[in-house]
Length: 106
Length: 132
Image (cartoon, rainbow over all chains, first blue to last red; front, side, top):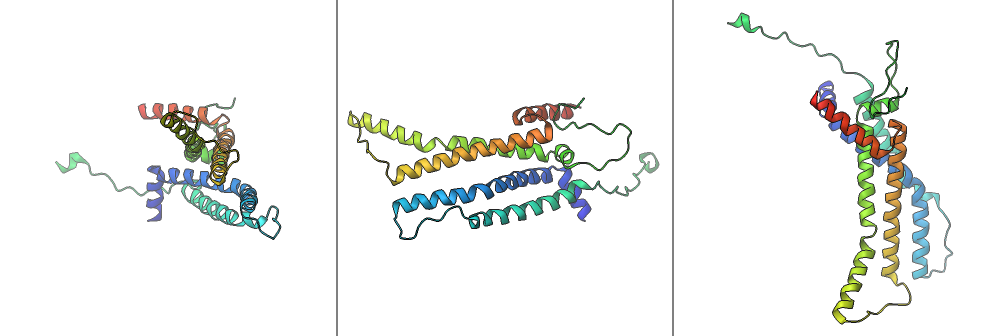
């Protein structure tokens, strides 16, 4: 059953479209690991300029990168497993049933 | 000589079965082309959204000027909404830049050409394959 599902996903290009979209997501989540601490720091400074607080503003925090890191790792794992299943191994050859000979049936 | 066409990767000369590299799998399975297309679409989407707020603000200013027949009030300092608008514009602009940069890197790695040329080559290749 899985072999038929795999063949269908590959031959209908659904697998390629899904994996291509997932690859783009994975790459952008990787970029956001570095961008999110900077964005969070800018946001904190920005809101502290509007609403003054007594506590001093913290610098770049690695904790802000954790959600993006988790998303990146999970998506990368899913992408790699799907890629490995769909495209690393060639199809198994189907045991095709002998086609009926039209001359014999007449 | 290395093939410059998208998706065309050289085969081993002696016919031995080699374990395909990740680059070759991405090129042959169309995954890289789709990822490049998605990244370029996100780049265009962000690039169109980036100037949307400033342009709508400018249009608002112009319509007000026409309606009152004079120059509308211009505040001397940026307020909360103005800063938020600038922040959103800069964020969209950087998203567009990053999406294009990533698409360019992926395209250079997989097809050895830029993203637009790789997609153009890919289209030509698909049309040729469909005719055959």
